[in-house]
Length: 94
Figure 1 (cartoon, rainbow, N blue to C red):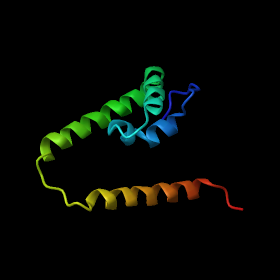
Figure 2 (tube, rainbow, N blue to C red):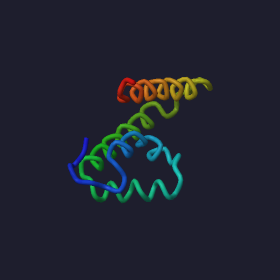
Figure 3 (cartoon, one colour):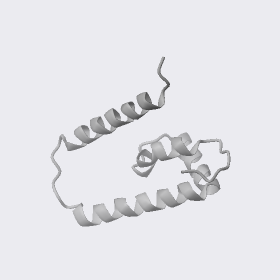
Figure 4 (cartoon, helix red, strand yellow):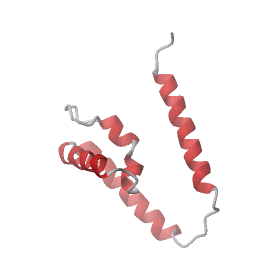
């Protein structure tokens, strides 16, 4: 997803770290770069808005459910495995 314009922070970087931004798990400098990107890039802003709405809906509907303590680490490990696989697939073979 991209608006077709060049940005200081690439759309793929913004979308790849969107949940870190939504969860306030980024440095202040990174957050500033992302906010600037959203001001310049309407498609990324729309994606951010959609993901933010989904996150709020899940919190509202499931916010009081007890979550197993190891669930987050399992989910994060799976996300990293998927990302590593996508990175490997994108690299040209030697």
